[in-house]
Length: 338
Image (cartoon, rainbow, N blue to C red; front, side, top):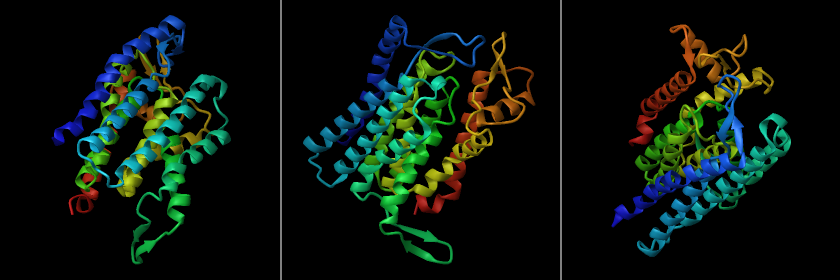
């Protein structure tokens, strides 16, 4: 009977695989297309905001998971409340991301201040249920209780930080979806081994939807995710870390995004992550300095090969992320398998 719980994962994948071609066809028919900035002359031929299908498939799958737990297993252990709080945050930020997409990145989208305000406001569902563990272990000081500081301050900061920084490392075909697959798969594993199998299944529902999306988003992309997907995935990563009480591990595997943030600040948040496309399909460094992980990837690859292509830069970033996840297994081994 327990295998029924995994049905939601398959449904998430199936829904995305069925609905994404329809979304792509509709966008092409109505002209809802975006420029592919890493292609020469920036052709405007890629379906926009495909993340709406990812989020919708994820939400439906999780609701089915809740239904199975409720009607078949008759669970009433408080987990459902946590799941609905998580879904609320994902949906709120999906709406924020969609509005940002509609306004367009070339026009600045939502103002930075208003966007930050909305992201902090989106954390309210986890705040009101008093989610997470309010104690931390500090060297030499031992266990320290944070009291209301944790739900009122640290939870909103965690949600806002993960949501905004996940959106920074983007702009290449398959990058955002692939990173989401790697990070959420790892966190789902962490959730399982630390005694939170329900959280693991919720995470894998998003992974399944992202895998289907990656099929259409990988080079050459037929659909782009938009902020609606990046905001939602970033929010889910933060929610899983908070509800699973593995914030330290989540921060560690977010190392690339921390570096990305500093590199973006180096360019006053004005330098774009795209490469400089050439007629032969290759890409070069767009600036004399490095203002993002994607630029670093191009820079390193140029040291070992004459021509660098978009998918090369993406695969190297994936390798970086996988290495970070493997290092997390070694560093946090005792905490994970205690």
